[in-house]
Length: 344
Image (cartoon, rainbow, N blue to C red; front, top):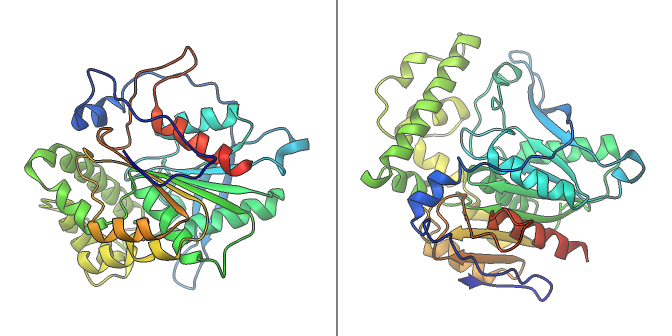
């Protein structure tokens, strides 16, 4: 395990369950193991992330919020949790983090990216890995609406890239005083390298899964906004890079997939992150890659703690439970430890 740790944050090392030391098994079983859910009912908050123009309606995102009692709500840490590609606020890892954070006394906001969680009609645009401003808009809106004093950001995979990208873009000069920490799991911070790894023969099962979901999503958008989108552009796609070349780039203002991967990746702003930041990454992640150049930037930034484990898969990190109250989701418990350390 590679770790750059602060004195207050020393999590136990990750030890995979004996029958789940393979990265593919970790990745797959991480989505299907049953887990406890004790979250109280949520309240829904719609946040405008892009204003209307003369030719286009505004874009909104839906957040499912679990608030602590009103008397202490503003003083408690509020954690915004963001899902990955083709996930939603209902993704199992989002719910898992939300449960642990709620029990620790935090407010929890389960944020949907644009069009996710059944919200296609709330935005005329597509979602993509570069929309870090949407997270900033949610943080700003909820802080103003509820008088929040402290906020932390947690993101998985694509959501992790958005959180890191926002932290880097804010740097130190424009950093909101309420933002205290960022934690990410398997962040796709090198988009091009990860997209190419996804097309490797051993990873085609994942790529086909994402392509089917993305294509279905895109065709739904074309039905809702037929003057904007041409559904035929989704015909014959063979890779995620194809999708980003023919659809994401065209409809989101990029010159092509390579331009999109470069401009939307958090890798380009790692050096300017100025708040406590955690990155959890498994060396056997099937398709998310962190390049040597990005590793060097991370190592050079004292604000970033990198924990790189030998095993863990993608967004899984299924460990053997060590106590009656431990569910074995090591990444979630490690994130909670990290956030609690920042509260001291």
